[in-house]
Length: 108
Length: 312
Image 1: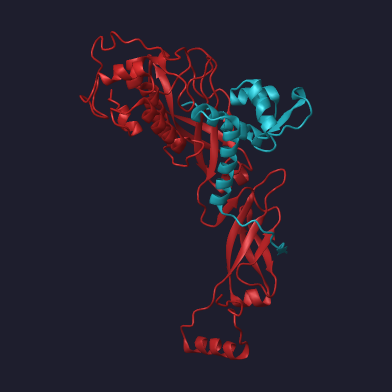
Image 2 (image 1 turned 180 degrees about the horizontal axis):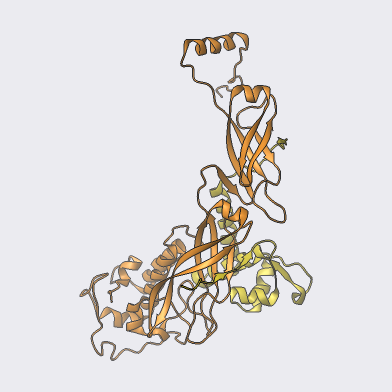
């Protein structure tokens, strides 16, 4: 039996950096909504003008969630942005990790 | 083909008003939206609810569907009678693009009649939908990188009908992936005709590990120590994802003290740390000699650990 192919995906993390048009493609939306998301503060690009905008993986993920919430639940952008923030907060609470600094262990 | 009771799916009576139906749909859509719900079947439930609403929100489709009245029940074998839809005209948004509705829906209303409701349905152009799946991996897979075989249920168009097919993909798990991150596999999503395929997104989560738990790139370990190791200080061997390391426990440590092994967490541009949480285990007092030792400690080192606990 022939070996089946191994797929190598793109990891959407903080090291990923995508352009304005790539973000539109990732989220399957038009440019206007992406601009509105930037204005609303849902995603923050590096770079001054839209042509030079770069977005990190976390922005891709946030934009995708907001686009789906708007489309599927018939809510507007500020509503979807609020839902996103609450969902992220809930996720952090569910993980339930203490956020205090620990002294550094001395390793031999 | 199984009959679908769309009223039951939305939890409304057959006599429900259009407003009742909309309200029921909205509530269920918020509850089962895959970005909101953590339930493993959320996406499937959301699609069912979306399909039911697609029919019941449209008075023409609803009237056509209502002909079947109470003659069929959810899940019962069903075949539409010939010319069942004569005299009904469906107007929905139509056009290409919808995927993922059931055989039942498609046989009644056709593929072109699905509108915009539903997760991953209703694109207005010919690009296939993106698919999403959650995958469970081990912490070791992220620490070292791995190739894993992943089984996915994916809807496929076969002779004009949509069926669920299981397919297996071998996927590279990137080193340093953390829970909640996604792997995008371009062109592995749905296809519509000869159009461009959508993408597949795999969201990673970790299986529970017998020793470690992960918080992003940081790894946490509960380390049992003896009272003398904690009080006097000692060097003990501690497991990490990369193997055993020696850790010096400072003298005068208490239960709950956290020590940090820098850079011993999951790899990345800034690697995570491993946090070691000390947990003091007391020896059993199961011999007279052991009990004598405890009594001697009580005499020699009296203390009140509850000094700060006062009733308000």
